[in-house]
Amino acid sequence: MKSNSSKLDGNSDTTDRLRMLPSVDSILNSEEGTALIESYGRDLVLEAVRGALDNARREIATGTNRTPEIFDLLADADRCLKDLLVPTLRPVINASGVIVHTNLGRAPISSAAIAAIRATAATYSTLEYNLAAGERGSRAVHAEKLLTRLTGAEAALVVNNNAAALLLMLTAICQGKEVIISRGQLVEIGGGFRVPDVMAQSGAILVEVGTTNRTHLKDYEQAISDNTAALLIAHHSNYKIIGFTSEPNVRELATLAHNHQLPLLYDQGSGALLDTEKFGMEHEPTIQDGLLNGADVIGFSGDKLVGGPQAGILCGRAGLIKKMKRHPLARAVRADKMCLAALSATLSRFLIGRAVEEVPVWRMISRTIDEIELVAHDWAEFLSIKGLSAEVFAGNSTVGGGSIPGSTLPTRLVAITHMNVTKLASDLRNHEPPVIARIMEDRLLLDPRTVLPGQEQQLLGAIVACS
Ligand SMILES: *Cc1c(COP(=O)(O)O)cnc(C)c1O
Image (tube, rainbow, N blue to C red; front, side):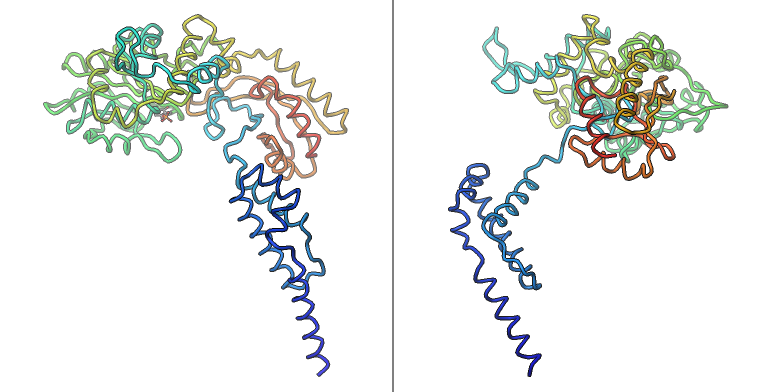
């Protein structure tokens, strides 16, 4: 009997506690409730308050001693609303030293590009309007003039990304016909996307020639038939075949293609407009060289070495570009106004010779070792004063993003020795703003090269806070 009555007491206690919970109305009408409604609107707050009350009831049922008050319930609701509305796409500090980091949004864009977006996206614009004629215009005009001036191409077209550029190129030019490509170039370009899969979507018939490590001009020549629509080169943008290798170059393939009245299509990928060798990197074929060497259409990304917004850029012969512009698929993969604004502004930096100073990707590539060393020593000194074990080491930054295979730049790394580096790295990722660093054994490595101006204080603050 005794145990029964104590159980009954417990139940009546729970019932009392549930009865003591404030009503929805009293919560919403409280001063803090009204403030929350101001911030989030009544519907969302009502839902969150109901959720908070449900949580409280559940907790009371499990036998907690506390009955939450209006203030606690609103705090719970507020947390829940913040969680709902915090953007999942957030800025991070990239201290990894990978310049075009695929997972961190590739190229951070220039101030000029941001200004161009701001100037045209928040208002109506001439996106498809011809002011002189007072009638419909074409969005295709916006970046074309800059692209043709920069690359020497007869014509150009901008689409959503380079995978779309490749798809449009093959669909418009090769659909139902054969396109010849070296086996050494049938690769995966990251994110699980494979060149042969993209090509298959176009309805072009892939004719693979040669072997993984060696393909000769005569392999292409022997594969040319009445049903061939083009030869295709896919640039090795994220891997390198080393050793006993051979592949005909662009000029040789262009000559072969043209002798058979076929176009040479070239998926260049990285979009190198400047000579990478001048910056101490490996040679990366430039777009201008590709065209000079006879490629009839070149496709590349806007957000790798162009350092602009996500885009796929097609440059080449006027007739082929026109064919692509007119293809129905062009509409499905067209670039939006913000992309065109940002891309045009970025390209104009190259045209006036200020890309190295103003396009962040190139500013990072061109940072001198002396400059980086100075920054690294400043950081190490600051962190040492804060009681951390920080030293400066020689290391490498990478261009990354499937841009230049195996290409690195000498850098100086700040190495922080820590008892639990895995936890430190994880705490930094969960910091606001998150910091992405490298780990090597028991050290956390920070590369100043990819930390943008204005982020240094935040970075150092994060490290002090997390260690
Ligand atoms: C990066 C790359 C692609 C894909 O470009 P996205 O802009 O990511 O769509 C295709 N081909 C090559 C050779 C590349 O380097």
